[in-house]
Length: 117
Image 1 (cartoon, rainbow, N blue to C red):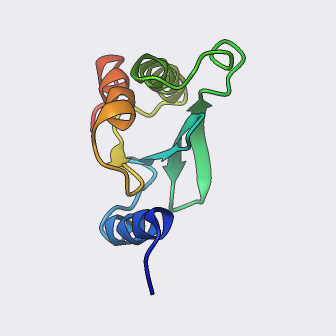
Image 2 (image 1 turned 180 degrees about the vertical axis):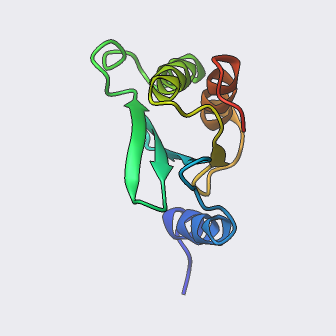
């Protein structure tokens, strides 16, 4: 049976998630990327709660197409919301995507705005 790109990404995601777990003092920054939007959440896996979230569906970013710059804006938004919630250290979960392009831009913008991974 042939594997699809989505199935391969989900396999990679499961493999990465075996090793990465977010806790209360160091939650997980999870990234999901679709063709039109990018989403990021800071998740406390111990309680199963989302501490902060941001996406390119935000009203100020919704009209823009998904580019590296838009992903960077989402990273900045998420970093600000995380710091407001009292989270400054996270573990990065790339979601099975390659660490490059939009995923990397989101991570670097979050780092530049005060989150440490």
